[in-house]
Image (cartoon, helix red, strand yellow):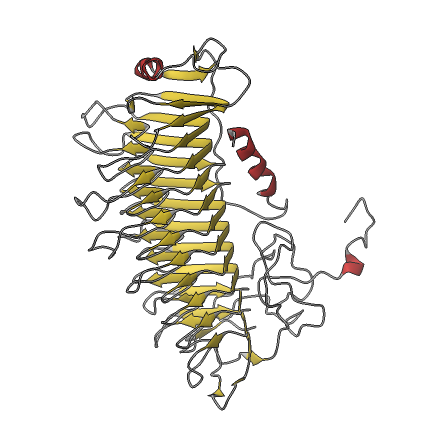
Length: 522
């Protein structure tokens, strides 16, 4: 698939105009005055020519004709200075299933060494294979140099079929497409990561980097093939893994689909070590990610320690031994607004939708948690210990089920803080299982008529659309009780909440009011 097809992704990633965003765009670098490789025909560019251009630095482009061309590198390329490698939407670099494609090396060990950035844009990297543990297609190794002196930008790229298996030397190995150690920042824009494998981080793994910014991208069918976690031999982060302190992570308008892990976090895995770090998600979908191991957990996203936030996110049909959708542990205060958790499965443990830390302040607002399953246990919606610091406001629980009918299916313990506007169903577990405990003191037991399957109802993430006769309609609170904070002004699709707001992540819009001001002024 040529790189130009990646550009089509950005069309479906557009936010509604009225939805606010913290996302930082990844912009193309100039190729003015670039070194041009090739004579206009396929096969006219050698590995040696690319390496010579990288040694000189600056912008590099290709003249290989009008058709897509694959160049199989005969030795690993090395970038050691500021450069922009632009494939023009036609060039694919291949490792030939025999080697890494690119190593990034900083040759200057001085503390005052200048920062430089390596940019790859409009190019594909495929079929790289290594035997030294880290970075199948690209590896930024930290060796003798002062940290955080190198940055990497990836724009309009496709990484496919790259492999970084465990070599037995470190539990932190991996990064099928890319492994980065102590970078200043990593920017990824409009890229696809497909069928990559690594011990950890089937697609991408960042260790000790300060800033990670991912927008308009997709991670699909990547696998973390190690086992045991840490300590162990890896298997964390089927798609994307981030480890280290004092780092900022933003993921926007991105999908994690059908990734797999043997240990923790089939879609996303993060460990923070301080409260100065943060992890944020906006307009992100986790769908069909599966944790396979028998002794670890979490299908969608694993977050350990450090602040985090999620705005307009969907966790759909993720599957794990325990905690199918989201897992949050330790000193990890966070917020979910306009979340949709549906069809997630905990095979043998708790928390089909999510499991949350009880020792950190967590707030969930206008979120729908429905149709999740704890196959052999309970707490199919939220698993959390008591006492806790969880606050729920305008959260809809619907039709979450467990294999154990005698313990609560929505939540095993209620939230300690009641933000108002919560609704749950059923009120009684079938087969003589007993009454459900209210998730908050004022939670209303009513059937919100949430559908069984999520759909594309507009916006970036899938949602569960309530009908016009749902009791969740027009009955939400407008401020989060106990905080005074206003609820989100838009729903999970970016559609404005009008009049009395609806509970959950979906705001019903009366079709008769769509054109109340005319076709030109909707």
